[in-house]
Structures are given as structure tokens and as C-alpha cells.
Length: 484
Image (tube, rainbow, N blue to C red):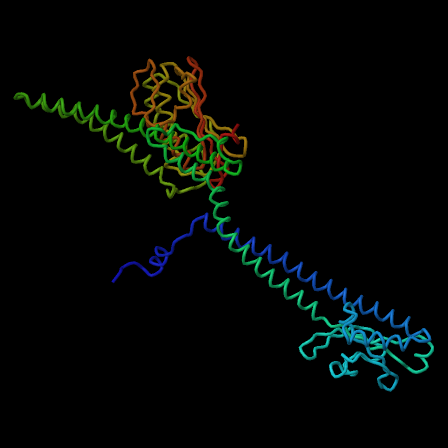
């Protein structure tokens, strides 16, 4: 038995149809629906036209009969017309059947073809001038009743009952309906191949885009797609792909740089340890010498431990699910604690270390102290004796808080500033300070965990100022555009 849950098996078995298939089906359906709507409207218009035509023809016959009955020999003329219709001599009027009845309903004169087919009671009552449908002997008739307005007819109470045979009309409607069905079937048969051809041609740029993307490999991450080669509707997709490739290229470059620096950073102390061990084992040595070798090795171990500790912290910082303990911090008190820790080191180096902070913000106490410690340690390392390191605060441009760490050290050239917070990036200077190149990267990671930002300003020979930008609340975010 399978261990896969039924829901997952259903998802795995369900296949998503291709875009070309879906578009073709929609195209066919739209053709059929459009054709059906147009055909239905034309059909209804034809039926309405035939009905109006029959009504107008009946009205014309009624007018003619009224005019004819008003003449002295009108009744005889009507009889002759009816007889001619019966014999089929007047083909144009064979579809018209007439009858004249008196006030009692007795037949005065009628068309022989009408007898026994349409009874007098089938017609609308006197005074009702509306047309009425009537079916008899497989035929369909349109019936009307009309009063005769000449003096004789009014005196006798005569009225006209007239009917029109709609057989020809119905035949025409049926023929039209059959043609519409055949045309619909033909449109369906034509729509299937034509829809797939049109859709395939329409999706050709998408296939070209896919082919272009397949040519991009790990060694060709600098490849960019030309938007001009594709339709305007695909320009946003092409731009998104190019932006994604730019991010991938940048990430691969950073990863390559990071891997090379990491290997170099770990190789140096390990090589030192191996060399010292080989020298120690090359000959017998005194306990004093072994202690010196172990002491030297311990220094390298500490360097390795520091690098590993920083790398682990950055790895945890890259995880967006870090649980920070945010609280309202008194920046002045927190900075004083860190300054006290470095006061002895600053005094020994002949550097003035001052704090001028009066602000509060939301943050994680431990991480803030670590970021500030890294900045002060850097500032002391690159500031000569007699210099100053000052920590101050100011209000941010969007309501947050800025903590500034300024020194009067050697400064940094402008070409290094964009990369200052990259991992393992170190600026070559005359200082004897040697670090791992991870301290400022940790500061940046801590500020990103606070939804904040860090920036640096420097003038060679005049010192450097690093600013921590904290948002008004951890739920907000500080961007480079907002802090100006």
C-alpha cells in the first residue's frame, strides 16, 4: 500500500493543461458564443420581420375588401376573387382566406378553401383588432377580425374574418434555422484547428523567451535578455528576468568572494598550527619550549574561535525567524555601559572616549551592545594617540533615532565606503590593526534585524563617522531613501 496521503496522490495525479490548450478552448468557446448570439439575433429579427410582414399584408387585404364592398357590385366582385383563389388563378393571393359574416354569425360569403378548416368561432371576437394564431390540418394561420365601414355593411352588421396561411413563412423559418445549425457546426469545425494555429503562433515569443533563458548557465550569469525582441506585453516579464539575473549574478559574486575569503581566513591559522606542530615534533624539546608552542597555538585557536563565532552569528542573522527581545532602551545608559568597558583600553591608547547620548529607542539590548562594541573597537583601533572617539545621538528624519560613532582616525577613501559592511572586506591602511573583516558585517546584520540601517561617512585624514539608524518602532523599516 502507498504511504502517500490521498490528497497528495490526487495533486500528483492531476495534470495542469497547457496554456495553449486553455487559450484554444477559450477561443473556440468565444467564437461559438459570439456566433450563436449573432445567429440568434438574426433569427429573432427574421421571425419578427415575417410576422410584421404578415400583419401588414392582412391589413392591406382588409383595406382592399373595405374599399371593394363599398362599391355597388362589390359583393359580387369579392365572390369572383374568392372563386379565382379557389381555382388557383390568383397565385399571389392563395394564402389569403376570407369570410364575411353578419351580426348573427351567419356566413354571407366565404372562400371555399376556408370551409371546414377555420370555423367562425376561431376568430377574435368583434371589436378585437389583434391578430391570432390558429393551427388546423397541419397548417398555421394568422387570423384577424375587422368591421366593414360602408353603409350596407353597417346596416347588416357585416364583419370580415380574414386568415393568412403561414406555411411559406414557417418553411422559410425552418430553412433558416437549419442553415444556422449547419453554419454553427461548420464554425466549430473551423474553429478547432484555426484556434490552435493562432494560439501556437501567439505563444511563439514565450517559447523564444524560454529558449533564451535556457542558454543562461552558471558561467553566463551576466547575460541579459533584449526586451525589444519580444512583444510589449512580455516586457515586464523580460525586465523581471533581467532583474532576477542581476540579483543572482550579484549573489554568486558575493558567494565566491565570501568563500575565497573564508578559505583564506581559516587557512592561515590552520597552517600556522600545522607548522608549529611539525617544528615541535621535529626534535626533542624542553617543557618550557612546549609551553611556548602551546601558548602560540592557543592564540591561533582563539582567532579561529572568533571567526567561527562571528560566522555562526551571521548565519543566524540570515535566518528571518530570529526571535529578538525588543524593549524600550535608554540609549544613554546603554552607551555608558559599553563606554565604561572600553575606557581602560582607550586610556592606555591615549584616546579620549566620550558619550553624548540622550535618546531612547526600541531594540534588543544584547545585540545593540554588540553592534556598539564593534564600532567602538574599530574606532579605537584606527585612531592614533591623542585622538577622540565620540558617541552621540540625534533624531532621524522620519521619527527614529540615530546613534553616531565618530573618530578622528585615518579615515577611509570614498571608493571603499560602498563595500565597508561586506563580509571579510578590509581596508588596507597604515594601522597595525588586523581583523577578520566581519565586525562591520555583524553591525549591518544587527541593524537589519532591527529593521534599521547603518551608514558611514569619512574623510581621509580627518576620521570616520558610522551612524546606526533605528526606526521609530521595530514593526517599521528604515530605507536609504527615507533617511536621505
